[in-house]
Amino acid sequence: MFTQKTEAEHFASLLKSIVLEGGKMARAMRSTAAVEEKADKTLVTAADLAVTDLVKNRLEPLLKQDNHTLIDEESINELPSIEEVFMSEYQWVLDPVDGTSPYSVGLPFYAVSLGLLKNGEPWLGAAYLPDMDELFWTDGKGNVMHQVTVCGAGKTSMLQKEAAPVYDDTPIFHVVNDKDYQCTGYHVDTGSSVVNGVLAINSNVAGIIDQAKIWDLAAVMAMYKTLGFKMENAHSRTEFIKFGTETLEANWRLKEPCIAAFPENMTFMYSKFKNLHAEKAA
Image (cartoon, rainbow, N blue to C red; front, side, top):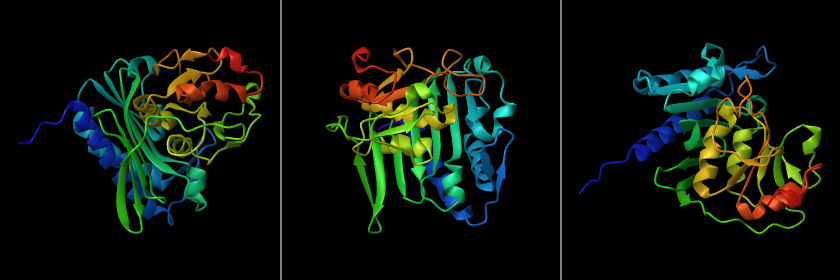
């Protein structure tokens, strides 16, 4: 007997298929995709625009409905205000090629990322790393899945909802330039917030701190939430719950850096930042 998919499972399957298709497109265009500089000094390639068009076409039936909105990096000037965007029930959040700099110089640290927020809260997400042929996604059933090609064969596994042990030299992903968040410990950064984000849940790092824009974070935050990560606004030390006017600047960047890690690693995370005190991270 066949069982009907829940809404979450249906959307999770759609997210997965879209990022796979978009990632394969980006990888195929890599050798010929010209790089240009946008007004905000960030980079854009023909692949960014092509993947954006692909996603818009795949989501077109949903986006015709009043309760669905697409937030994408390459069409940001066409969006209404942040307040208006979050009046809809569902927000699809796209980064067509996160890690444009690594992508443009031949490094593997880039990803296609698509997240789905429900009333501003991270809900579902998928991210595909084309050069590594690694796919991460929430399955709509309370799990985060990982698929990787090993020796020509696909291997799929369910990511564990438990923290690895941390030691004094355990690294963290650190993507914040603010002097108040200078890291005193071993830290790494791939050049892509999405790649950092998915590797933070599939490697022996303690956690991640980032102050990126919504399209860099929506998908990975859905995975964090599913896995039971604790997400906190680093300065106010309040729980990060949702995107909206209270947490986003006008340019869609987080107002505060967000620290994400398994709960038992949060004290360790705070201990590694200049001017932040571990004893305050209860």
